[in-house]
Image (tube, rainbow, N blue to C red; front, side, top):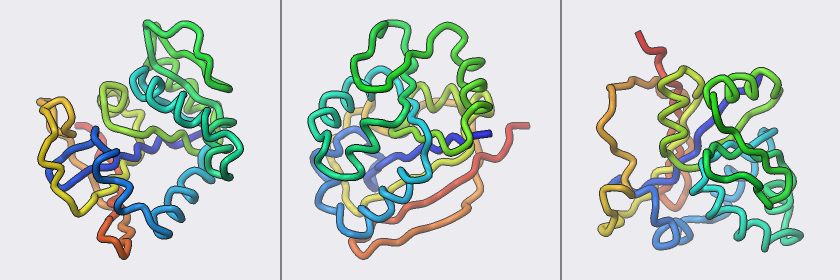
Length: 185
């Protein structure tokens, strides 16, 4: 059975949406190594429609650029959407209808990790239904200072607890905090 891992890049003030303004200043050899290791253990990606629409053109354009890009383009991708019908990005599949049942089935038939980037409605749905196994917050030592409420990790929701299972400290100050959700009572 596969393990669903969420990887979210975040600033100290909770911005998870404006990576173009702060992430690349901290992407060094450590970050490259961590990203590569994360991708190597991954058999599939799962994402919402907005992430798909952001990733597809960028990664498709990078085909052949490096090993990471080629892996991103070739790996099976599952897009949770009720509006996307015919995804054009290589090896993409749409999940709609009974999303929870389909993600559960995907998890059961996948041997390796299923990776999800970003923290949005799909993540919250998986958390609520006990499908998310791990959260990795790539905490960047910067205050974005310009995130709108919709750009923040925070949302009004039921309280969830997590257990810290690992840390990876980079020389740039980025810390990857790995957490496992505590099962809901």
